[in-house]
Amino acid sequence: MEPGFTEAAAIAGYWACQGELDPAPLLERAWTEDKTVYLPVLAGDTLLFAPYQPDDPLRRNRFNIPEPEVPLADLRLPSDMDWVLTPLVAFDAMGTRLGMGGGFYDRSFAFLLEPGWQGHHPQLLGLGYAFQRVEALIRQPWDVPLDAAVTEEALYLFAKNQVREP
Image (cartoon, rainbow, N blue to C red; front, side, top):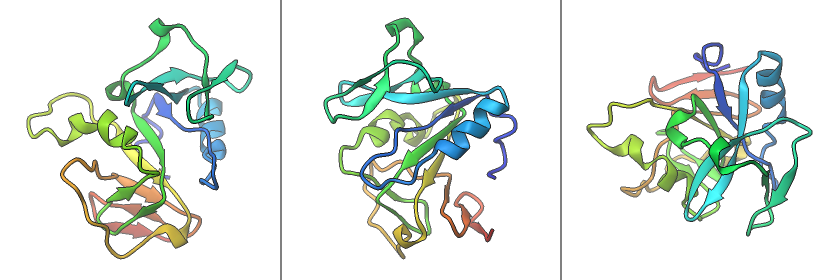
């Protein structure tokens, strides 16, 4: 497990769809360790995060993805998260992430690209399969890199340029 999970209090997951790696085992571990689990909620062209427990009511967003049905006051900003589990289509050795093409994660976490950002830095952890790791992706200026990625074969720590085999 990525360093920092033990200290993290706010864990953002996602509802797996279209063959994405299911984060459920990590979310279940978070619940057993009394962490607050959040799921993304579409807010225009960005994401906010809603607290989520397994029996909470869900509604489908415009992409037919379930999201928690909570009062607006319960939604949290991306900068409030400690760990953010992100789905991906591909990732490379430098932590560049290719998603489904909507840009929601990049827009939501764009503050992390600001040179003067002094606020909280959520750890972005991409979840994928080994075959989704590619040699190189072209990183656009708006692409927010991952801090780490995990597959069924390895944990990749990009900030430290390390790979841990299971």
